[in-house]
Amino acid sequence: MSAPVDAFVGLGSNLDDPARQVRAAFAELDTIDATRLVAASPLYRSAPVGPADQPEYVNAVAWLHTGLEPDPLLDALQSIETRHGRVRGQHWGPRTLDLDLLLYADRRIDTRRLVVPHPQMHQRAFVLVPLHDIAPDTFLPGLGPLETWMNRVDRAGLRADPPAGRD
Image 1 (tube, rainbow, N blue to C red):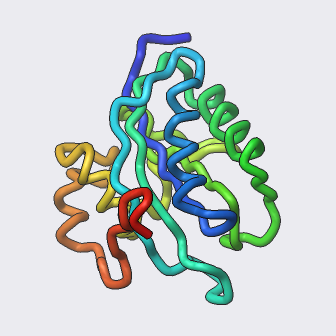
Image 2: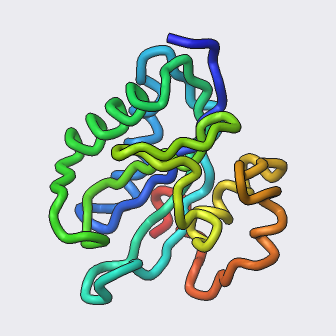
C-alpha cells in the first residue's frame, strides 16, 4: 500500500432497480481495504451511451481516499460489480452495475487494463455534473480544470434522480 490519495469512481446502472444498485455500491466502496468514501454525489438519470434499446441509466460519482494502488483498487471495483451480478457482454450494453475509475490522484495511467483519466469523461455530462457536485475544484490530468469542461459539456437529457423513497 502507498500513501493515501484521492480517487474518483463513476457509478452507473440501468438494470435491477438502478438507483438501489448505485446506493448500495456507495456503501460497498466504503468497505474496500485501506479506502474511505469521502463523498457521494446525487444520482442522475441519463439516456444510454451505445445501443438505444435499453433502459436509461442512473449515474453518480464517488470520491474515495485510498491507500491502494490503481490496479488493486480496480480489482476491488470489479469485485463489487461481480457481486452485483455484472456480466461483461455487449459493449456499452445494459448492466446491473458499472464502476469506472475516473481519476487517481493527479496520475495519468495508460495500460492494457486501465486508462486514467477515464478517456471519455470530459465529454459526458453524467460524469462531469456529479463530479462537480462533490469536487468542483478538481483538475483533470492532461485536460485541465473541471470547470472548463463543465462549460463545454452538453447537459441535454441529464436530470436529477429523485431521492430514495420519492420515485
